Length: 76
Ligand SMILES: NC(=O)c1ccc[n+]([C@@H]2O[C@H](COP(=O)([O-])OP(=O)(O)OC[C@H]3O[C@@H](n4cnc5c(N)ncnc54)[C@H](OP(=O)(O)O)[C@@H]3O)[C@@H](O)[C@H]2O)c1
Image (tube, rainbow, N blue to C red; front, side, top):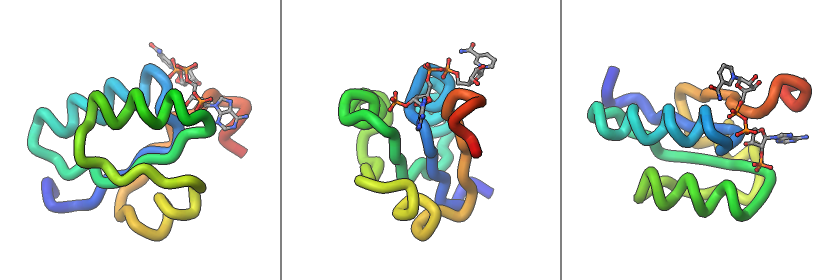
């Protein structure tokens, strides 16, 4: 389970905190996309080594397990 490539779409408070805690726990947090460069960069600071994508499709292609952690009205 810890070998699965985990990605995040949406690097707000929930996504960043969950990504950081999963990495601390030994999981592979590999990919992230967020709408704003500021959120992407903040995620990278908290979860070093993550591949930051310019589009969400990159996360879909690269990750095996994906958390959608945008605000509810952006999920669709
Ligand atoms: N925080 C909590 O304790 C908590 C608890 C329970 C449930 N939740 C739920 O979890 C969800 C996320 O909460 P949060 O606290 O992490 O919110 P947040 O810090 O405001 O982050 C919102 C995220 O949604 C993205 N986003 C917003 N509008 C978007 C759009 N139109 N297109 C693409 N991305 C968009 C933002 O991207 P950018 O930053 O890149 O713009 C950001 O990654 C919410 O639905 C909230 O109700 C939160």
